[in-house]
Length: 152
Image (cartoon, rainbow, N blue to C red):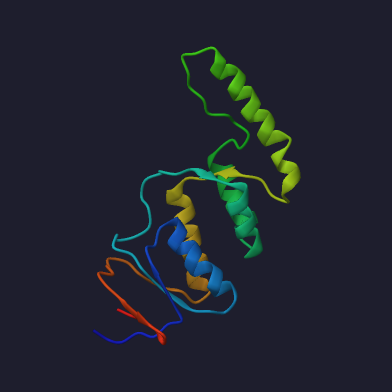
């Protein structure tokens, strides 16, 4: 196997891994992402992007793109709830008010809904644009770390 030298090794190329490659790339630091799957997510899975995550995307210039993709996929202020109990109606209303009022005052951005199978490729493209190398169908089975760095 050829030796690859990069400042940052990211093991796992899902939402967190792609973000972990994207952030140093924003500051000019290259990274290598190894992911055992053949590609990014193909099923919707997770769909809620928190306000804090949107703040992070905002800091690297991705907020508008993520918001546009989320608005194309979901009605953003919809409330998802299913219950057979009357008290759930009260809780659902409280949740809606929390999102519309109080938390929005604490941040310059808002939480959005966007499926993982749409968000992951978006993060991948941004990370690659910033110099990340992404290796799918690659598994990290071990590594050694010393004062000079990590070797796999």
